[in-house]
Length: 419
Image 1 (cartoon, rainbow, N blue to C red):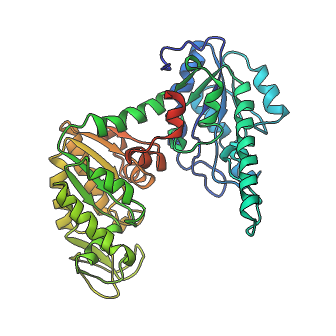
Image 2: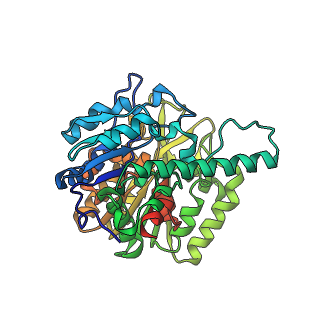
Image 3: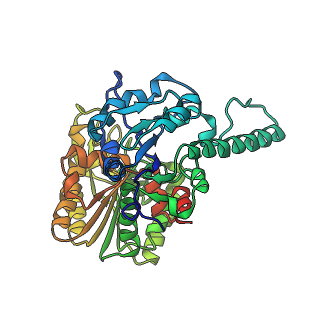
């Protein structure tokens, strides 16, 4: 398989699929440019070789052309970070994109407009009536798949080499993330540095595991994490359950959880996971106490209570001090650590203590030689908020892609390059 370091981009035009889906405020200012900064090394390598770049990305989930989601909003920041004036095409598939791509000279960079302005990017029919017949739905899907293939072909025509550096979209079989690779031979398609680093980090955790291996899974719903939890039960030594899931497990075990978030229809599932952990000889670590509040507010009244004795009118908003100690002891004895999801409502400073304690324990373990992988939007937000991102072994830019990769699923964006 071709690698970025082994390829000389001199005189080449590279279509680089990046993931510049960054958060913007109401004035379209970027509030977190992590994903842009993460792609810069790949882009600089191409330019240093004497190549030119056509950047493709999406922003948000537009349902057609929408100025709110225009990549023009992020153009100045890309130019600033790259140190090169980046040109812009007001479309991705039209005459302007084709002409500006053709005119690119070595060292120049062109950013195409939001790829998701085109329904063909995702291959999903748009504008189909809710009451459409099965035949109409099938016909629309077939037509859109053909349009998706044509879009990939057109994007590929702009370049001589394809570089996928968008791990955050690797789980999507979209025109620009997977199908486009079919139009390049094995010697002219490769992963960017970011994509390769993401793959290496996950495979180190799952395939080259130093033990004990501990996974910390947060999140509000057991149902959204069931696949990843079941997969991890075949791999980890310790599985820490945190976040809103805590209270579904607590109630399933007969506890009283007050007004805490809970999936009442998943109590049997929680008990099933407890049994599977026992059968797999996995140490399933559950919270023993909680920081409860009398309202979902940073300014609410609070008290520490056993996780299975939360009073009516109160809800668990974070783990308590005894659970912090329990989690930290397990984490600090680990050699491989995966963190996905905070322990509570960390966005409120009053309920960020548990997540901060977990982060601090991971830092200590990492300093003692453990490999720590942090992934998922909220976990990444945690380590950024607490200023400890650079003290983790690797912080992933992927959310859904990371989870599906850990679940053991084959990601279309990776398969398209690896074959």
